Length: 302
Image 1 (cartoon, rainbow, N blue to C red):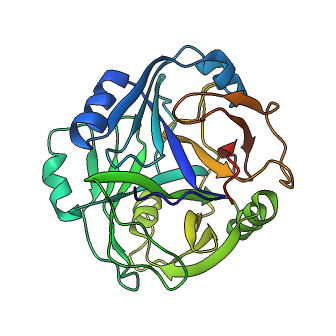
Image 2 (image 1 turned 45 degrees about the vertical axis):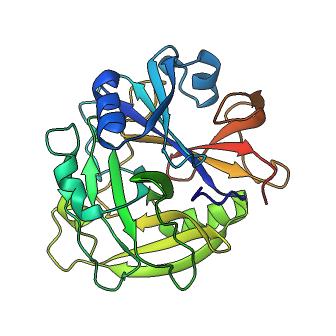
């Protein structure tokens, strides 16, 4: 298993899609994830996310064939006409560790995934080779083939063709304020910062070639967890249907050792939840400083 479990481990991500059946074809048939659960989204779970109007929505949960304890949940709901990927604050992308990244464009041909960033090496970042795709709900998925560890973090190599989410990307209203929140509220560590030409951001905002962005990693010791990105002043809050999940990359689930000592305000009190993801542990959800939904599961992992 390629997933090292400790405080801060990414246990999953929620994706909103306008067509669950079609997205299942993509995530199962093309990415090769295994279907674990399917049915209506439980009302109490939707309420705990602060999204009661998403209750009963068609829903499915998948996990990688490696067996890593990390689940992608697909929730069907109507598209929002004002949502454009890489233009709003909140969860911007999920990075999956994969094998053979240069073979992925052909594997995804004719699917609901649109390749917006073909595989390429990035100057100054030799640690992995990234590729970016958008799904049917305009969710951003990075397919990254890990080459080596960074000087300050251990990057997981894939144990199946598509493996688990190993970094989640946050489009921040204020990068350092978000870094400080994750440090103090969730007891995580500030990692390295990098200045680079971020082509996804530049393209989305019409910035000239060569425009530089700053990103900062958040981790637990050498476990990478978040990449927090500076966004241009033109970025806006994410448009949402009333009391429903945000469109695109909607919610991230993290493990925490204990709820004690966290400086957070839960949307609703923690409750015991069961099933493959929760394993009979307490879970509750908070909103981060850029409006992002963060579900926390009290696992006891340190």
